[in-house]
Image (cartoon, rainbow, N blue to C red; front, side):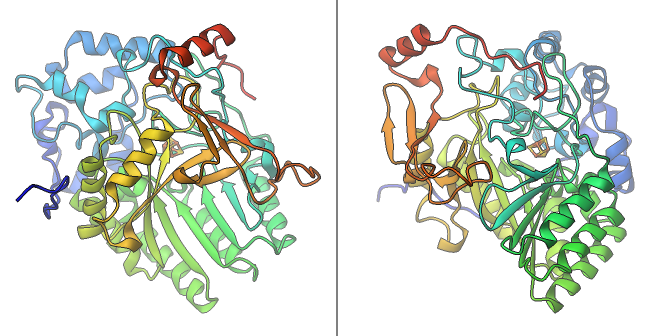
Length: 459
Ligand code: SF4
């Protein structure tokens, strides 16, 4: 009998031993389980990474990282111990080959990018931009993006407990880096959140609110709870989704008594009002799904919320093979009860070409994962097209593979086109990485655009 392309095996989740890392050799179970301990011991710079892994990484690796931070990184470094511990889970820094394994690690690839990861020919696509989805242009009030007719995205805060190298909101989220300033909210937090609430009260056409950031795990719990409780008072709102990568990056936070009790209150109120609350998280690799992550997800489901769903991002070197994606989906579904929901193509931000896949690759991956997962848990692969919104990768209207340009249409006006009678007749473009194009396509871009993308000025 011929083997199937993918063979399912149930794999027990494992919490890697953090004591294998010299800097955490004496850290107790109790300390590890503490959200506070995790936050205090996040790795924010090269010196702290050295303290954790000791001499396990070569000097060349640190030089590579240093150069990336000085010349390419659009996000500053912030990695919770929980996430560091899932990198190279089977090796100690003293083991031979640790540096090579660290370089190749799927989580390291996007959380601790180094200069040699990036493309040198086309580090950025000429059409890449800060705020590549134009979310700020669509702010109805500061931080509230009204892109779709019935849904809004509320960016409550510009920070997260962890910073991902490929963050699509690099324009707003995180600390400035040597190559990127960050946009700063003009209104104070409470003023901004009050303005959002006021807008939602006066726009009953909105039924679905994505409460995001940044990451809601960085908002003090009482403020998040009062915001969500406020949403529950608005009768037109039927769906609330809380966006938090920290369910994976800092599961200890979602396991605190304060948060569990608060989520129970919100879930109870939501039930009384017939509103669905869900948590949306962001896991890109199966090795990130540990018993603590599963415990946090199940604790949230036990509060009575509707669901916990995953929105991963397709990243070369992290999850660009179908078996990696299927391993991840089964790890989420089997033992953590997290619903695989979306895999986004990486957005067109500066310096992301080494991560991005072409549309054809994303279509192929969607094809290759079909049929293994239950239909309800088969994630859709999504291209978030500028000025359009989310489109399944097979919904493309036209696709010029030579130039790497896909063309997309839409069936609603975004917040910036409410008076544009031609918005629904237009085609909107999305671009494949140039280094994947045939020579004639690469030559087109070389001759067309010699201007490097400027990433420094905040919009
Ligand atoms: S958690 Fe989300 S918002 Fe925060 S850095 Fe990562 S991708 Fe960006």
